[in-house]
Image 1 (spheres, rainbow, N blue to C red):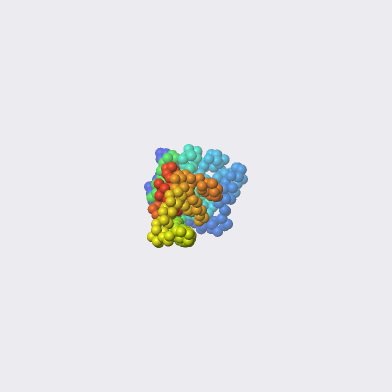
Image 2 (image 1 turned 60 degrees about the vertical axis):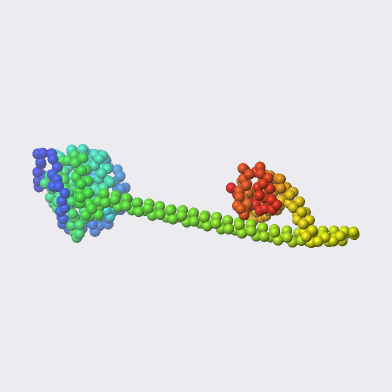
Length: 384
């Protein structure tokens, strides 16, 4: 007697749902033995799924259900894998998903409405393809007949949520019998995933939370690395500025010491020569050393009242010394630097040290004497 004849036709079109439960079912050897054959690859499954539609009577056993289903209800349906039951179960285990099983009874009076209205609805198709590995078979032939004898449905349509178990068994997490609308089917499947899926490592919510936690941890690590990198760069820049300032001031001190030593050496022979020439003139009385020193100071003071020596140091380390009138403006120093035409000198400003002072646009109208650059000074060119 065929299964659709033995199945009782329910008067009320309500699904038979026993609530959330878990039942361990032992598989027959004929089902388990099918797994020993070569497993068809996932890519080949998809290519086979999209081959031209054949008449149900002319297709192989593993495509009989899908060919008959599409021949009558079209190609908009969940992605049913054309493979053995054990192969589909292995795919679900590898993908960390549950398996959706559908036993198809073509002649049952509830089947046409369930297939066209529920199983082929966009809501059910999207939900099953996103969360399950779907497998279907005809309930009175092949592996479909063996699974019907194992699960013993009381009526059709018959759907079940299955997970792999230890040994030659499966875990029957949920079964739905009879007609059911799309929203009810999705609600039952969602509740099954939430309440039972975590026990088998396939909870969609658990996977989403794990993914969110992993992403947050990765983002936090990236923020920590970026902050440490930025702090290291700031510290390196600060250290470089300190080293540059120290080198600049050390160079200025050396230049000032050299300049003072050179002026002292040049001044002594001139004074001695002038004094000797004056004293050796006929009729000129010898003057005391105090008088000679007084006149030397007066001569030096007179020279300082007219000129000032500016030592200019460039960022490259080069130096230039130029004489200016004490009444010249700071603008004259800028014009002198611009006239040199040195490469790399564009926008800049002048800085003096001891004490440190910046001479920029606001001070260009000051005289060198009023600016404190008299009778001798050193200026550093700082690029902007």
